[in-house]
Length: 242
Length: 242
DNA sequence: ATAGTCCGTTTGTATGACAAATGATTCGGG
DNA sequence: CCCGAATCATTTGTCATACAAACGGACTAT
Image (tube, rainbow over all chains, first blue to last red; front, top):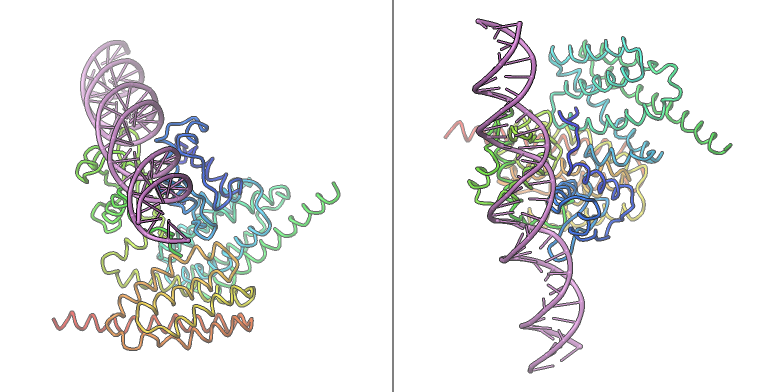
C-alpha cells in the first residue's frame, strides 16, 4: 500500500531528481557526484536539504558518500531494486521490454505462491477484504476505477497470506500492474477481461483450495503477459511503419 | 551482498538505536516520538545528526514526520519489511519462532524458483561463481568459513537468474541463513550436512535442468527447516526443564 | 625506490536562526 | 448555548555558517 502522504517536500524533489538521474543512467556507477556545495547550488537548495536527499539515496543503495572523496554512484547490484521509488524511477521513461519481463517473472513467482498461502490461512476479515476488492472491480466503469480496485485485490491477497514479508513485495506487483495499465491503455475496450480469473481466485481462497488458487493466479498472470506482448508487438509494428 | 562499508557513523548509531526501539515494540505504532531537540539531547547528538537518522527511518517506512505534530511511528503494514536493517532489527533479540517460519516460507517461494531460472539462463561466468562458492563450502573448516561460503553460494544462484529484482531478495535469504547459523550453532558438529544438496543444485544448474534444480533446492530448504525445528524443540525442552 | 608526513579537498557534525504547517484555544456572532 | 473564524503556541522544515575528521595525492627524507 501507498504511504499515507505522497506530497513532495523540498528534499523529496531533490531525491527524485537525483534518483532518476542515477537510475536512468545519466550518471553511471563509479562516477562521483559534484561536491555537495556545487550540487546544492545547481539544484537551488541549501546543503542541508541536499544532504537529506543524499542520505535517503544512500539508504536505497544508489550511492555511497565518503569523507574527502565525495558521493560515488554504486554498481547496480547494490541498488535496493525492490524499493518503490527505485522501481518507479525505472518506469519513469517508458520501461524497457526487458524490464517488463523481469517484473512479470517476479509476479509469476510471488503471486501464485501467495494465492496458495492465502487459501490455506486466510481469516474471515481477510477474505472479506478480497471480496470487497473483487466487487469493486466488478462495478468498475472506468479504467481508473478498475486499476485501483485491481491493486486492492492483489494487495488483499498478499495480506491474506499472513506473512508481512510477502506484503512488502506489493511494490513489485504495484509497479508491474501500473506498467500494464499504461501500456494497455490504448486498447481500453475490454479492460475487464481478467475479471473471471479474479473471481476464480476469490472462490478458491474462500473454499480454501490452495492448488486451485495457485494455478488460477498463474494462468491470470500468463494471460496478462500474453496480452502485454500483443500490445507490445503492435507498438513495434507501428514504430517500424513510421 | 553487503554494502561495501559497514562502519557506523554517528547518524548510523542513532538510526540503529531508534530503529530497534520501534521494531522491538518499545515504542508502538501510533505513538509520537519526543520532539527532535529533546531526542537529540537524550541521545547526545546534534539535531542535524538526529534528523538524518529520522529521514532514513522515514524512508524505511517506520515513521512519518509532520510539521507541528512530530514523528509518528507508522503501523507495521507500512514498514519496509524486506529492508536489510529492518530484518536485522527483528532478529536483534532472539527471533520469534513465528518470524523464523515466515523467513523459511519466503525461502521456499524464492529459492526454488531462482534455482530453476538459474538453470535455464545461467551464463558461464555465473556458473563459475556458483562453483567457486561450492568449492569454498567443501573446503570450509569452521562454521564461520562455511556460513560465509554458503551465503556466497545462494547469492550466486540469485545472481545467475539474470533478474536483478531477484537478487535484491538476498537480504531475506541472508537473514534466514544467519538466523539458522545462530540457532544451530550449538550442534555445530556436522554443519556441513547440506553439502550434498548444494552439489546437486550446482550440477542441475550446470546441466541446465530447471526442474531438478527447483526440486533439490526445495528439499534443501525443507530439510534445513526440519533441522531448525529439531534444535528449536530441544531449546524448548531445555527451557522447560530449567 | 619507499615509507612517512604534510596539506588541500570533501564530507560529517554542530549551532543558531527563521519559515511554514499543524492543532488547540480563544473570541465573536448568532 | 453553539458554531465558525481568527489567533497562538508548538514542532518540524529549511537555511546559513563554522569547524572537525577523514581521505588521497604530493612531497620529502632516508
